[in-house]
Amino acid sequence: MRVAVTTPYFDFFPDLKNELASSYPGVKFRNDRVPLSEDQLIDYLKGYDAALIGLDRFTQKVCASLPDLKIVSLCSAGVDHIDPAILNQFGIKMYWAAGINKVSVSELTLAYMIMTLRRVHEFSSLLRKSAWKGPIGFGADLRGKTVGIHGCGYIGKELVKLLQPFGVKIVACDRLPMPDFYKQWNVEEVSFDQLLERSDVLSIHLSRNRTTLGLYTGEVLDKMKPGAILINCARGSLVDETALAQRLTNGHLAGAAFDVFAIEPANGNPLLDIPTFFGSPHIGATTRDSWRAMLCSGIEGLTKAYRQEPGAYPFD
Image (cartoon, rainbow, N blue to C red; front, side, top):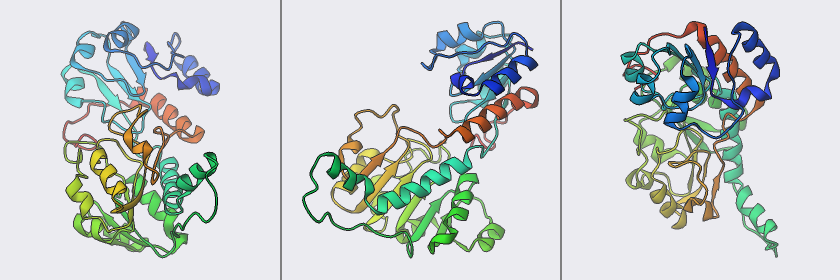
């Protein structure tokens, strides 16, 4: 099988690169981190049977131009950049492993909860600007708060486990029932409206699809508990960023921390100018542990790829 790799991250893991090269002689690697355009992707993959990819998009044009391509194996945490109907149209199988980065993202989420409650970013900026001239105000403890988790999948469940020592009340909203998990970890299942009304800290862990895009409108944000904080380490475009900026500026929400944005890179995003907002450049899975796991999963997918079903998890 002729394999071409579009993600450049194998350069950071020479043992995995050697393993892949040994298993698939002639494998082609990239070390350029600039995303490939549609035409560049076609040129790069022409004549290859399998693609081991990151966030490349396999459009109708791309797939139609690659008659030899039979397998697309993902080294990514999400699949919202792939349309299974297009792959199926051209007989291309796919592989993706769910929850591969759950530890890294859940740990980052917990860090952002504490950091936002304690106003670490806001206070640190005073020091950076040499503006620390006296008392700087108060933050808040995580202990004793009600933490809401919207989406209790792999990452949401991992976050529940991490929160156990903190003495918080956990409420969760998910489209699927999971009474055994909730009972085991002392989680109260609530409706979406109850989640908004009761959460001192609300953390989003939803996939990006037609049911979640733009879900957190201004009207929804207004239903959140006054003084609450919002964490999003899931996907961009789930929250109306303009509406969020307004609620942070008028004080309805005490703070927010986002790792994802509607448009990325998010350089120049107006949210970054708001003192109570903290943003990071989509680093949820950027640990060596997560990337090793994702690359190993991609290698595994070259032999385990299968036909995907549109409308079925994770494409719903």
